[in-house]
Length: 330
Figure 1 (tube, rainbow, N blue to C red):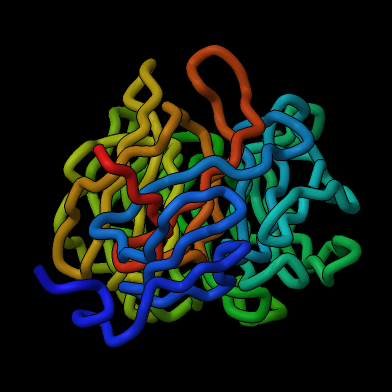
Figure 2: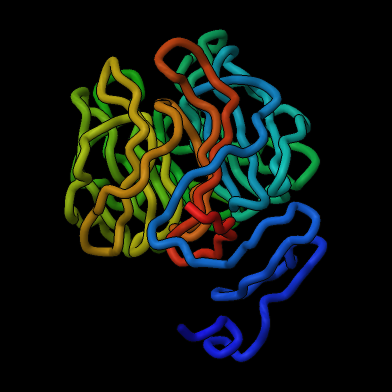
């Protein structure tokens, strides 16, 4: 039988601690823990537990990336709370000017973003059009949506965002508005009305909308090219109050609910179809995640587990990522 050195051209390293950046196929003996370890690549994506948020809540919205995110608004409240994530832990920062739930948000990081729309039961009207801009320290009110509404979806960045779907004083909506850094402009509608839909996309010219209710749970997916929405392949599981991350050609959909049950289902979008992949660790609906995440790295946080609001954070690592394994003799 060939030895490791004959196969790899080197002996197994003896190290007092695991290497900080192991490469695929590398094997070493950790002399501190007295175990043999090696670096493999994941074959499918998986969720792992991260540090919890400071305040449990649901029906807020996330923006940013998996290492630099914000969670804004939600209930109990409706909350004005904002929490910032640095890739490891959450810190409470300055509140929104208007506490609300069912709002949308957009932004590439925890230093710049928008929050818009939502529901504020203490106000009049309850359905809101206020937009607030985040500079990394404070929220500042800027120009309102053209249509007041809640249960919206949003995506994009601080200077180029999109808001779509939702509900106002009547039935669910298909209305889409585009933000140019100063004003909202109504553009072409979605093909299907809906509320509590999810959105992904890093700009207001390329976006994805999926799931929702009208009022029953929806599986419809639509892609936006900067001018029009086109209906494409449905989710495998119709659901509302779910979250997503990615682009209009490469996205994740996770969590949500089919009333009254919460879900842990995760699906991957490849630009043509959805494929079910590894579930979240916990069932959760009315959850959030930064839409600028990717199918390689994303976050899921907050929501409702069917009993109460939660403060959970889960971290998605996509297929092909490095994974350290411990070898045993079994």
